[in-house]
Length: 353
Image (tube, rainbow, N blue to C red; front, side, top):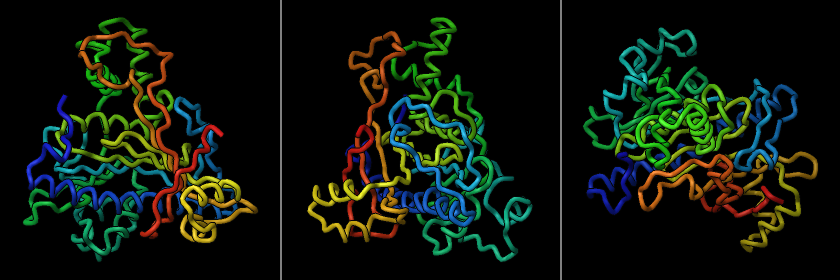
């Protein structure tokens, strides 16, 4: 299976592209936290509703999440690709002329509150108005596609090229693709029977940090992440749902979940002491709101793939063992507020506390 290359394997030109992509992705990370979490928190406050904070147990691998939809929680799906997606991929990732982000298509879409004052340069990531343009499109059904613009004179110019992008690759095909890569099957999902195929599909969702057979954007996100592995470049998928209340990110680095969490005064003091930061400075840079005695912070958990979720070193076929965990918690940290540039993430180990 073709997949991304590390920097040392790239040409100088592609190293430059990788650097620029990662710089833009840093900005997208910040923006998606703002929109997916902080703006959602504001929505609940505006409607005088209590915010449904994610509990620590929900961040454990294989956790069962509450099946409740919260209308005030922003939901979205964004696909951000380092290169341009080849046309042959249109069979399963629906990006066509009629859903390009051109003025005619945008005005024809009744879901978009756009006036006639649309400037086509707003769709480029370097535009000062890009964040406003993105915010208008984020609530749209299906996905947004951001990719390199091969028609631009600038070689490494990225734009939000398509909206209403459907992900139509079947879950069974995605699970089969992953299982072949991990050497649990040689050719076909059902080659070892229906029960084995069912176990593989369950493990596919676990691989992406999701409960079994979740619906909507989260399923589309993990299917897209698996499908895009066929392109020899990196890609990043951002998704948020009204049930999870989390920003999920799938990339070459693996899976991460970012949430808003109530942090106690003792936990904040512990984080400050671990990094020799004055508590007052920590609150200024990391706390987005206060509720009673608790501070509201941005908490991120990143996950590592355990041995069963990595290709075997000898390349031999092996049997799937459903009871073995495929993911484990790797890093736990609170993140600075978006826009704070001089503050690093702070380790805070609380999921299993």
